[in-house]
Image 1 (cartoon, helix red, strand yellow):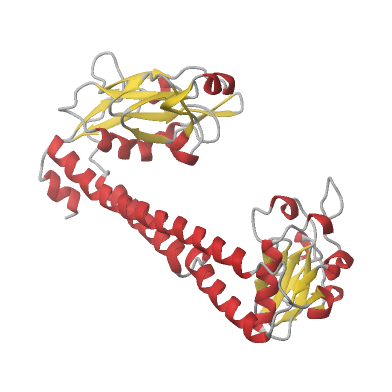
Image 2 (cartoon, one colour; image 1 turned 180 degrees about the vertical axis):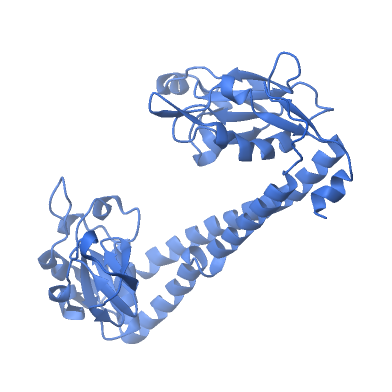
Length: 379
């Protein structure tokens, strides 16, 4: 018997539409148009929420508010259509958001409804004029399970435990990233110091001549990673490199945007196409030191091409790299490796812990929010 079965213990679960004239559980409304100019001219203390997910959806603060108290909002238009948020306090929403106010707080718990809609709302998103939408008329039809309020609160208590833990871990990760950035900037700042600088071609052996691009249709599937400018793009049967190397993006928009590292280490058997330079170093610390340095400096002076940015081999080789003593390189790399593991590793560190907690939360959420559907009445 599942934990939910034990909670219900034979209790019948009612189902009601989210918003309906006769038996709906909530009232729905829409936000209003607020331009950037309006937000700037009316700057204040009350948050305004829109369709984005960053910063909890907040896009600014104004002097007045449209809503007060507990509620749920959802995104009606765009890529985030169907995303729901639990809100409290005084706030306003824009015209790409909707607001949900529960009619009877003794019947339905806001957080319970929020957790339910976090699963269900996305299922009802549809394409309107090529744009994802979840308008009020469709949102209103979503069926809501209404178990006894005590059971709703117990489910909320359990799920809140998981979300709070994930939030704490995420906050810890943010703090560690700031700490990492601080130490990285300090450790890799050699301006004004008496230190030797050498062009990259002196520090590393360039193996670009060994690269071999293979079109997707000509690749033979296997388990050897096939690398491009920003990482693995496929897996193939054969390899042309075997060992530890540093790959550096040769072309692509990421050379300017820097959304992902443009220098990244690889190990073992691999195949590399002509979109990434291949560098070989004498030691681990030499390779990782240059990797950290290249990812931390502005490479714009070495990049050519506007429509298609390119870091050609000649310009790559000419990049001046600080060359501290072997002992100092080992020290710097050791410190940065520890922060890198904590903040970016997918197999260990905080990102892995957050991923595990999120999966655990989703498992219990799905288990606790799976109710018998015998009593659903379609509207």
